[in-house]
Length: 143
Image (cartoon, rainbow, N blue to C red; front, side, top):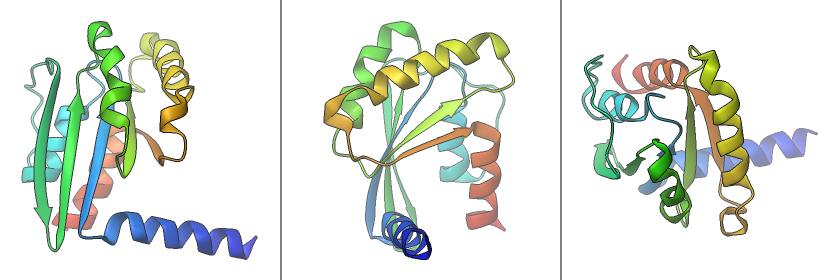
């Protein structure tokens, strides 16, 4: 058990402490993906966001780490693109708006659809309610 925990810690360190990493943020519309990117990039939080049309890519440098973030639109018409932007990345971040119970089931179904893609096997997946991630990033980079 300890060996498994050590391997997990080593993987986590390698993922977040290498010089360059690429993350794809996916989730239903209004799940906080763009807000998360903006908080990482500038430390600023804004409630006034417009939905992402297609995708946005942003490179952010924090210390010696360059993070390339793919923010993919969550509307139904863009969900078919998720797999394409998830291939070959360091990790997939799946965002959930837990404050909207009506979307939980749809979010779960989309997550399962993504996990069923054989091309994405072996890519680490991080799932979170967006406020938890934002609080973590604030503590790591802006405290």
